[in-house]
Length: 50
Image 1 (tube, rainbow, N blue to C red):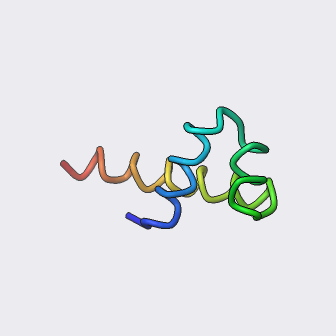
Image 2 (image 1 turned 45 degrees about the vertical axis):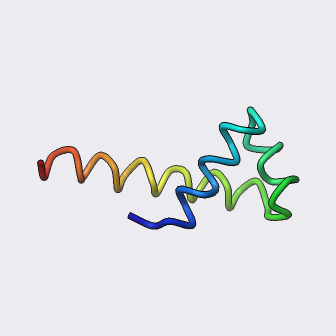
């Protein structure tokens, strides 16, 4: 699991939106969206491995 993606996800939860996390972290919204999507994929794969 990528901890940077997890950190971005935590910011999304704290800020309530992708754009809020983007502003708080000073990264593009597209990056936030992509990294959260990648995290979802990784977690889904982990679910099937267990």
